[in-house]
Image 1 (cartoon, rainbow, N blue to C red):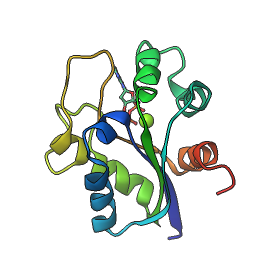
Image 2 (image 1 turned 180 degrees about the vertical axis):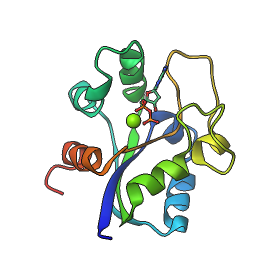
Image 3 (image 1 turned 120 degrees about the vertical axis):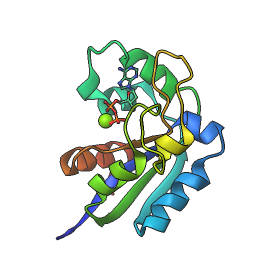
Image 4 (image 1 turned 90 degrees about the vertical axis):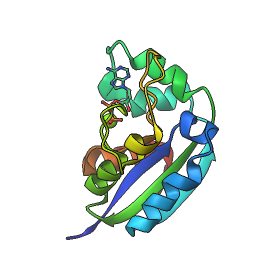
Amino acid sequence: TDSQRTLVLVKPDGVARGLVGEVLRRVEAKGYTLVALELRRATPELLAEHYAEHAGKPFLQPLVDFMLSGPVVAAVVEGQRVVEGFRSLAGATDPTVAAPGTIRGDLARDWGRKVIENIVHGSDSPESAEREIGLWFPGL
Ligand code: DAT
Ligand code: MG
């Protein structure tokens, strides 16, 4: 099968807790290739597009506020079936039930806040991945 790309974000909780290296270590140890990597501040405009699928949901505003609370690390990661593969590395959305061995299962927890803080974002389909890469890395 053809190689694929996905957008990975280390969210502000992951950056603030010093987990950037740990996340990238797992991506590299799995055998995927980093093709772009940048420490970056999101903007409300970028996040409105990035999270367009969540428009109207009650957690959208807390989610956007959280994503604006500090720098994020944005990366484009490449490899066969990497979209599915990184979702597998990340684990379930809710870190309380995410399997041990996954990024979220090992490194995140419920802090009792309105938004789920779960360390990483990974695109959920090849189509989402190309759309999100275009938003975060125009021209790549
Ligand atoms: P994922 O990041 O696993 O793709 P998602 O796209 O459904 O999950 O949601 C985006 C983020 O929003 C998710 O990583 C954490 C937060 N979130 C999702 N559902 C939530 C909820 N019910 N309450 C609070 N935050 C939520
Ligand atoms: Mg998602």
